[in-house]
Length: 529
Image (cartoon, rainbow, N blue to C red; front, side, top):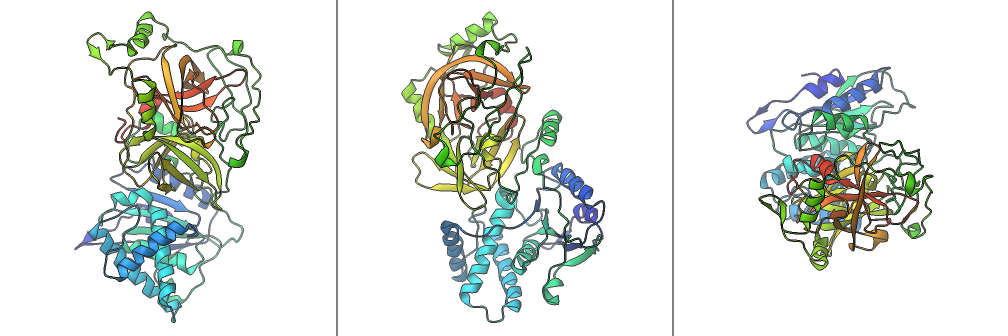
């Protein structure tokens, strides 16, 4: 059918017959006074689609250059194997015969279309072009390739596509089952009529060279896990963009003091039930080379002013609960695992990762930590660790490989939590499922402060605070810049919190998002139910 509006493109789903699905490749030309509102409404509506209705929706500003040598070698190897008669594959969809056949046929046809432009195309030019197609496929579809099948409908919007290679890449996506709409608000692509004819035209207004589309906000699509209405509302209201080509923000994990979502906040309120006066958080901006030199902002209130939030947490039964955690029973008739030694807890560092954050130029700008939460590559970290990064490199203990990813599965800037995914099987840590914690119980923190990979420190729970309406565990185990996203463990080796922030005016006044919020956030991911 003809596509004559943005809404039509988003609502239509092609039929499937005899192994082939109808797809749509459309150029939306120009813009109107309501284009921005329509685009934002589309982002929101498509974000709320369930997995069964629409497994993937994304709006792209541009495609990245292929620069890392290891990527060139990987995709180059795929090309050579394909030319030798093998099946094509990408990082996010390996060893799938059907997908390999479909991808190979799509690349072959797209290369033939490119040959129309480059009539004297050599083997090296063809290889470079196909390598880009494979890299961009991984980049755009990411982990959702794991859900690919020939019946599913993927919707992609791309902004201001002017390069012929990129235009042909989006055409190739239609050959593997994606519906693609090119938002050509400034001008139409300039290419030969034969290639233009690959896509249909939809006039939505006049061209405007100065027009800028609204920033893509993918927060509403929270991935494969269901969320409550309350959590969804928080995601919608507090979303942060993860578009890889946004203006780069230097992401620096917060210092050991003065941090509450400080990786990106210049100012925040720290409030307990006693209405703590406003304090200004440290404003990050250091690169890795600057990390050791801390410049901590004094928040303006002394420790005596920090009133604790203790709703029923000092009840004798809960004090007993904490005592029993280092003994034999959780509650009457309920056993818990024995308390581990510090040496045994230190061995759990193999399930904690170090995350390096890279900007658009491929330069490292910060490091953080993460916790393995799902066997299929899912890693929990802080939102302020991932925010502003264009891609991430993950290091795992006793593994010489560095795992790069641009895939942020889910995030919530209110709780300061995010989940990224790498292409590797993981050994996740268990999440604590007992009753309330209590002051005085022993804890261990594992993370990578100042890039010192998987450092282990011990301390106690010293209190409970409410910071910006989020329940936080206050603990004394030392952490520093780079520890954000690391694990806070009880003596049974269970995750009770994620190291997130700290408070000035004292030593070892550190904060972690509690296991209760973590449990809700990671619901649906294997390994932490």
